[in-house]
Length: 254
Image (cartoon, rainbow, N blue to C red; front, side):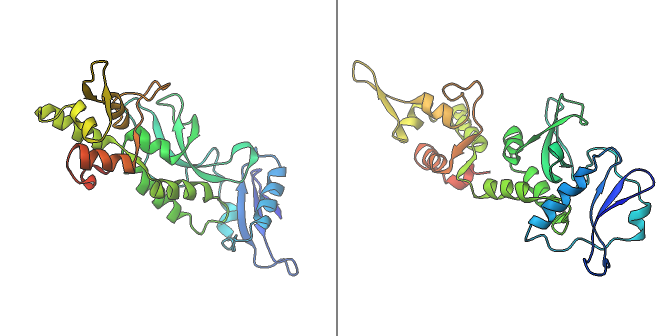
């Protein structure tokens, strides 16, 4: 049911069909939200077989003021890159859909109130580090594990994919290669040859395929791209570490 409040906001409440007892708070709608949002929320709630039960409604719910704009209920730390762009987890509801937790990015920089949604993988790539974005995500999901008024399925899937993907960050591998080059005990060509990536000129001279190595470690862009990739397949990382640098892959994994 939709319960209107004096300030124009409304509560969407789940209660027993026979006695109308045991009221449970499904959602809170701001005063400027269309009335059909309550029907949409109810339909999504009833269609979710794993929804469980919402928390009991209290007198405080009837007196509490609604949150005015796109709320940041997660209260997790925000991240800010060198350009001033803010990345943070927010509760959002796009196009009247069921509210969900998503990573967002401010647009333009320094204006956090204007944002676009991004994937966790994009946040990790921007900072070329898994932390603290991964820990912030896990903390947010844990905080909202029992909140049935909010969808966390997309963010959960993004965290799972990030954790299980064989595509990993290449920053530490790039740093290891650059360190060896700085010590002048290896060249890019020698590392590539050790990895089996060779090329031959018209005279039959052999050299290493340095362009392949530079792309894999995120030093130069892939063909058709304007920015180097921060990612590399774990098998390729292991190949360059073991054969090219003669070190354990663990030493260049983030």
